Amino acid sequence: MSKATYHGTEESARNAWTTLCAKNGLPEAVNIGTNASSLSEAELHAMRKTARRALNTISDTLKPADYTDGVTDALVYAGNSIAAVNEAFERMQEAEKFFGKRQASGAASNVMRNSADFAKHYNTGNSQEVGEFDIADYLRGIANLRTTPSVKNALSVGTDTAGGFAVPGVLMPGILGAMVPVSALLTAGAGIVPLEENAKTYTAAAVNAIPTAAWRAEAGTLATSDPTFRAVVATPRSLSFMFKVSRELLADAVGLTVALNQAIAQAFAKELDRAGLRGTGTAPEPRGLLNTVGIQAVTNGANGAALAGYANLFSGYQAILQADGPAPTAVIMSPRSLIKLGGLVDTTGQPVNMPAMLQPVKLIATSQVPNTLTVGTSTDCSEIYVGAFDNMHFAMRESVSIQLLQEAYAATGEIGFACHVRADVVVNYPAAFAVVTGVRA
Image (cartoon, rainbow, N blue to C red; front, side, top):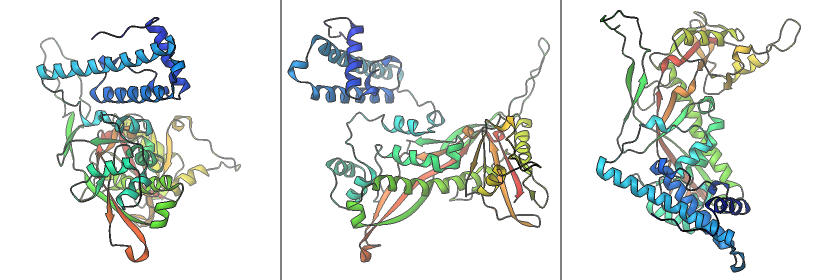
């Protein structure tokens, strides 16, 4: 595919495009067309969308007198970049015709851990332009209040099988991004894997044991090792809650978007934390770390014992290392335990510094670790979770679903909504975790 020619060089055209992007506040469009041949299909979709939006935005600001040779070359550069993306698509399609469609490399390879990951995932894989709107606009549309044309378009195609509405991808980064700072597990490094398939379950590979290597003589027998991998079958379970809001607040309130994102995110984050840490595994509840076979169990006395400063953290750390697990990156505990650690003082009343070995480890509190557990004769015990938390994730269906509760609050002039998500907990490497039980105040 031939490229359009420039008045100057391609390098000067690229520099002129960079200048136009900076002038119009479009830094994400500077590198359009770069390494197009090595990108995935989703990344190509995202690049093409970014290029087209930037080209349209810049063209709308230009007047006839602005079309200098440099500006023209910059626009030609953008057009050539889009052409390069299209060419990469064509080659990909030709390869698929010959070799067959490429399969995804596995759900776990698409783990999302932060706002940047969420934005990247949900802004790709869709070549159609999506209008801009927020969660408040979307709920107004579901409730048949006045909203934007973009929301009406989204609602027309977003109905799910249960009569609710699948939240569009444009809104998901805001909801999931708001979950990270209020979720202990996501803050600790656990991720979210979006499941795009329609199957009820999906199977992930997990490390069961490190193989044992042994020296052998020439023509000698190879050492026999325990099974190294195992299959973890994830079955996304339904997690739901409902809330209500007055018609007046939904229609007129300023700042409602932030409040809605926080409310939805916190409701899901709290229960995902509890299930991810302590879930029983008895349907419909997922199995959490506490009940996962292969994690390291450390008991703080038959009847529990007072928190022994950082010694309890070291006990979990040591148990993981002895099981050939990776060095822990975070510790999750109840607020009571974290505050007690923070308030440790020496014999002179001076604060006790955290040992150097633990300084890289995040200390995180969550109310989902109770202080009322029974261990032996004690009923005021808690738990401490130590681990490299990037070795676990939530397998989650693509979108949150929101359902309008038509009549539930009509008598009070309020509007009810039910929010649903489907998720399960996957622990890829149990040896990377330890639970210290019997921790008293």
